[in-house]
Image (cartoon, rainbow, N blue to C red):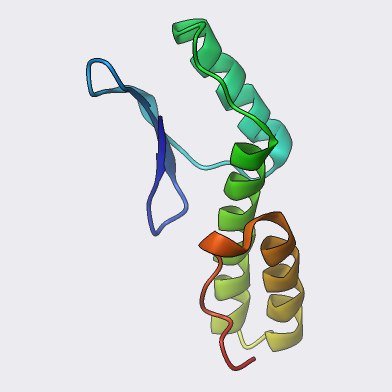
Length: 99
């Protein structure tokens, strides 16, 4: 299983033992996410990750970047990041209400 927190870090868990698999991580691209999923498969060959999980990680990271841009007053750039994030996984994107 994979979990995410509000700081856009993720952690892989062994569902059977309920123990973490490795340290928390942040993926800045889908390539990094794919590498982490490959690592998880080395720990447990039954682990299956698909494009949905990779898109979710990407959306979380883009949302984080968008929020940082908002804090810097770069509203138009933030809007573009939020839009990209929503295309990947709209369920994890928030903070762009009213922009």
